[in-house]
Image 1 (cartoon, rainbow, N blue to C red):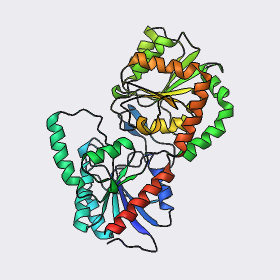
Image 2 (image 1 turned 90 degrees about the vertical axis):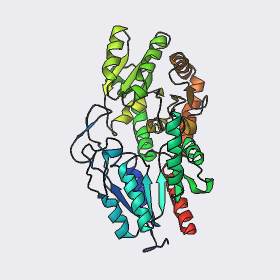
Image 3 (image 1 turned 120 degrees about the vertical axis):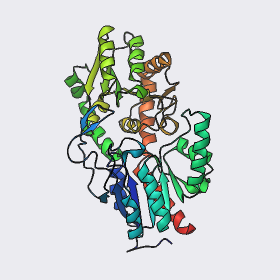
Image 4 (image 1 turned 135 degrees about the vertical axis):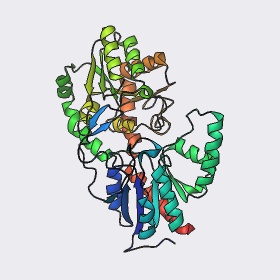
Length: 400
């Protein structure tokens, strides 16, 4: 039975490690007068010393505060290979935490880690209501036998979940596919710290040409921006080849922000094809990214198998038109084809080249897309997340 302590609902959160997109939301949620929040982390990755990130293929440490402004605890992780798939977090102590603390609900991020299942078990034993939030969608191809097994397992699991937080349209469709009633699904948009990025946009926009000059890009050159890990499923080579098709038609530059296994291949191809105005600037931390968003005229994420793509949220806070594929989850909520960007079939380099030309050549189209990106992202923020979480809490309260 849900109750209140000092007028607040006791809400626990279980997540893998401090993540730069999640922790600002935890701070805001902790400030809410109706919520007493405790966040449980399964691993310390991203805090303390630099740690190796396999996607970037380098050691990183985020340059924004990840552990300020909310109550948290680190659980002991018994995994021999932390954050390496299902066995990457092994934290059985979450069971004891739920048993001893009488939380009104626990918000669990997904079901793809062993510790999530420890949390499910602990919640069922302690009769703690469960709120589930994940990133899954139905775009991925799976063999028939895997789909059958998954449906059996998830149908049984989801019947024992009290309510679900949906990150967007595809995620909602996913839950409905597994027989979750619409009344149990609450929209909590997959968001970034809009206030931070919009503040940086206002600070930097007047210095746009100065920032371009630091890279050696002239003020009259249009800039195409890619900012993500350089890995096969992100398909940065598609963008480079699309640029190759059109780079002589418009005064443009292509800037790659990020690092990863594909970087050397991209650099070799750029040199072998004698492509001009292609810049590889490497990994940039959270406080460094805004300078690259502000010089861009269009942002491109050419991924396949991308559950969301939060980098799109960040780009839209700078009013950027977005070009992305039909395999990127964020496209279905944030990128409206022809309004604030373009959507093309994943892997279609010719179509990507056409979208780039449209986004760069027509000043009127570009102006409207800037306006529309800012308008759309302004309603896709932590505020809407808080609203959805509170609705979920109220639903559980009434159901108990």
